Image (cartoon, rainbow, N blue to C red; front, side, top):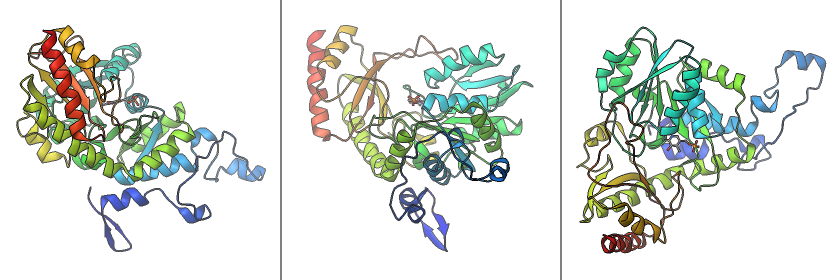
Length: 394
Ligand SMILES: *Cc1c(COP(=O)(O)O)cnc(C)c1O
């Protein structure tokens, strides 16, 4: 993160995470903004009621708690403004609905989060918006896919589960030449490791469910936008009133203060486990853009400031039963969706049933890891015993 100027002092990203969105002396000196719960906000007079000058009007328009997180995220993402949503997926749908109208055509990366595709292929389709999926490696070649009705390009890097990197500045430059909106799902890197708006993204989505929460105990989404797109985003958010609950926002503000520490530890643990897996005879490839052997490494190195603790591997050919024998006996890795918590997770996955622009046909079964904060030797021992079960089962 770049530094920030305040009272002439240059402040670093970590200082910003600690101070952003906090005003202790507006609340009797208490350090943290509490969870303000409420629907009704009272007005002291008829005149005030009609004037709507109060900072708070009604629960769906925001509370001091939601405003604290929005202000902090705006500062951290380098945006003009931020709105919150009750999940990462609802943040994606809000960003898309802020741009599209009936008759539009949108371009979505073939490696995008699968529920994003489902929204495009069902709700947006029903509303008369046509989605075209493109090869995530297309770069500036996206220009050839832009037609008169194209209004939006969705990018996500690295790709969900498959970890392809995208040349986001090149895609954004081509999209902006034709006046399109560039929406990014930036959940993997967060603004700490990929400053989205500096790199040409108009609206950036974060599933706060992942590293902002960090504790697998809440669902939240955030959309930050630049000057050009924030008014449309805000108006759409106000019209839909798809708002998160006060406790979840409170917990996200708490997670924000330690997010840099947790993310850097996730990066360290993730790289350590990825390198260990690379050396295993059962593993064919590790899909992790921060590894020099990864095909997306040069783009990652050019544009990103770090990597998080989520990556995938392709095993050498093995039967379904052998993979199940490995996974079923794991003691420390849980099996479940979501990621970015303090605990390690693993899931098997297969992108082949839903890809349309590219083919997913790896040489063996695929696994995705979210590395937690356990001792790395213990995680390796757990996987070592898993590989032994896999070998014994063939
Ligand atoms: C999990 C995830 C989301 C959705 O977040 P939810 O809060 O679970 O709805 C969006 N994008 C990516 C890349 C994710 O991994």
